[in-house]
Image (cartoon, rainbow, N blue to C red; front, side, top):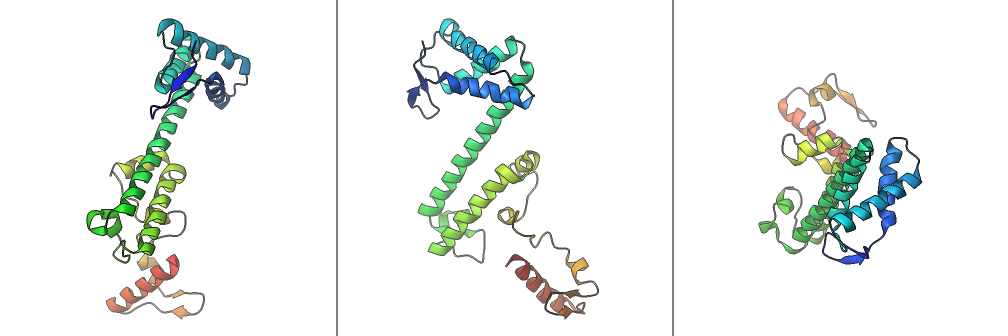
Length: 220
């Protein structure tokens, strides 16, 4: 009989079979299933496998999840097993991202800019000041949010692995950035700011000055 389960951090907590049932049922619902009793029957088979074949009375979370996949496949629920595997992978990704963010926050809090690249990445911000550190908290949190909940996972993975780089990812849901503004198109024949009209610049100095103004106005 299983009374306790070992969490990923090593803690032992009371075993709750309804969590297995819920996970199986949710995976089945993605495919249009609506048989809660079947999910409960499969849960009992998972428990029987853990106790009778593996002789586990205090299994680890990963062992339970492996057992769920095995039982689903062996009992003709391969598609449900696939959805469960995808759900499991997504939960792992979210958990890893949260852990990564906490490590970043720890470094921002306890390391000076001289020892922390993130504090130095924006030349306009003094990362060692209270406000500079607070801005980086927000910036890094926004990046993680965009990676986890906004970007297509394909692009999020490519960005994380360095195959592509999304400039100013922290501003992704807020505004366009300097890399996304077509300056040539913006200045051709002039443009209206809403408070006046600017003619097309005649020299590089004017182009540069107006580009800075356009970008700053857009982001602020």
